[in-house]
Length: 158
Image 1: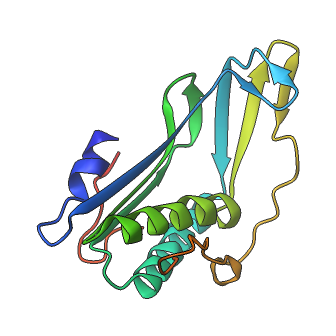
Image 2: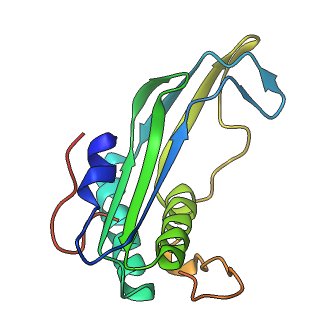
């Protein structure tokens, strides 16, 4: 995951934002989570990530590079499950584009989570309804325009 944060650095960009989502030891109503496991509709994941990247570059035309990574399989506690990294000339665009990237990835990419916890094993608490990338509205930060893979190159392989 370090490679992703290094890869998005660009000489034209002064802001780099990296969001890392890690496996934690609890979720709502479930104490003692011991591991997470992710499954994906793999043939649809890369096309959806490409759509998110395109949407980011369209909404924030100053963004330099974007990386979107999500692991599948077992993810032990404290390890990264998802990384979104964005570079832009200024921090506001980098923060907003990264926020849009993670929010959109979570709601549009067909990846599902199973939790093992002290009292059992189950897939996510609520059903995930996959929506189109176009239907995800950017978060409004109040004072700036709101808005994955690279715009010019490919991200590092994990």
